[in-house]
Length: 154
Image (cartoon, rainbow, N blue to C red; front, side):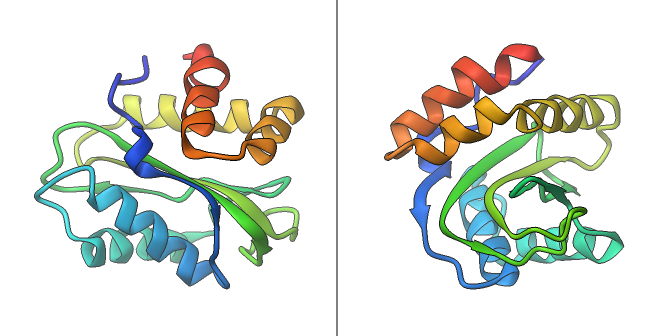
């Protein structure tokens, strides 16, 4: 089940500028840190980068799903960025990314983390979902798409 507050409009960016994978991760880190007063964007960025060093979280088809376990948070946090231009991300299909969902989970979370990742990956595998996310023109529309199309499979 997707937590009701997994993502909010304040953690969604539409038509964002990011010139590199590093800048995209920094942007996601800032959005994710804004969801918990105990987090700093630097700490979140370090955790996301640490996870990326294990292997790219680029799913292919222009989508990335950077994620990390973070000590001290009580519930999963999500953030989404729709990029204006694609960026290289070392994705599994070697194609650049223009959609990225960042996910933080409590350090001790196992099953919920895997369920959320699987649900998101399955949703992003749907061409019509990706097309709708790319066509959205504002944060409110993106958030509505997550609630109506992405999180429905959970």
